[in-house]
Structures are given as C-alpha cells and as structure tokens.
Length: 111
Length: 113
Image (tube, rainbow over all chains, first blue to last red):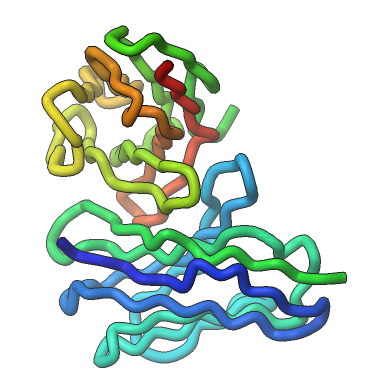
C-alpha cells in the first residue's frame, strides 16, 4: 500500500512567521506532487504543484521536492490568519491515475 | 457555473438503503475522480474515469459501490445497501488533459443511520 505521511499537527505559528509543512511518500517512482488547502467544511483547493527536484515559488508559498529522500515540503511566508486550514500533501502514483493524499496537517496562524 | 457541481450536498440514508450521488464536472474535462473523505482524514481515491471509460476502480471498498459516466460527462456514484461505515464526504474532482490539476466539487456529505 503506497503511503503519504504528514504530521497531523496542529501546527501553530504567529502571524507573520514562516509555517513549514512536511510530507514523505513511499512510491519512489512518483513524478507529480501537490499541496492542497482545505478549509473546514470545504473542498480541497490546489496551492502548488511540483514535478522537479528543488524549490518552486509562488507568492508567499514555496514548495520543495527531494525525490532521493522522498520528501516534499511547503513553506508559507508571512503567515496570515486566513492561512489557517488543513494542508493536504498529494502524490500521483507511478504509471497510474491514482492520487494518494496524506491525512493533512492542521495549521493555525495566531493574530 | 464553471466549477465542479455535486448533488445532493447532504444525504441522510437509513442503513440498507441505496443512494446515488451525482457529479457534473467542468465542461470539457476528460478526467473525473471520486474520493471518499472521512472526518479528520485526507481524501481516499475510489475510482477514475477518462471520458466514459473507467480506467481504475481499485479504491472502491466493496462491490456495493458502483460508478458510471456513460456519456463521458456527468458521473454517478451509487452505493447499495448502505452501512454506517459508508458515512463520509464523497468528493468528485475533474481535470483536463492539458494539466493534471484536479478541481474539486463541494462534496456530498452522506450520513447513514
């Protein structure tokens, strides 16, 4: 069973700080990686996608991928209370169509 | 609207009842996914369609679960003889061939009593 592991949290950071969210995965052949944000009672929405080793930046968000270590992370700079949500790491399975989601990390940004 | 539409938003079923959940994907999206999300968990893959073809149904938990997309657009997830453990939010997502980003609907919250 291929797995995606995340710390469930909650992760609590003060407003303006950097929030660091981490994820490990078991499928060594995976090529596509995603971070989704899910507000309570709402559906997931895509924050970032990353396919190559290294960093990818989009506004206040930076995704980092290390395929050798099977590790994906998401950094949120200048965290805002509106960033408080559950962040889901998702990995597309090798050679298939299935996307495996982690259980999510709950983030609280304190004003 | 331009997004993925799911209906009903909420469904209460008595144990043993059959239910049907509908998903209307974004127009033109070839790929359609169904997920089950239990409270406090991430979405769990159920099945995948490319147009009308069901290419992966490995996540369906039992033969009580059945999905179809007969014309390659609207999809229906059917659960027969519902059980309490079927209570969850059922999410539908669609994506285009140009990008493998999945856009999610608001989900159907199923409660089996």
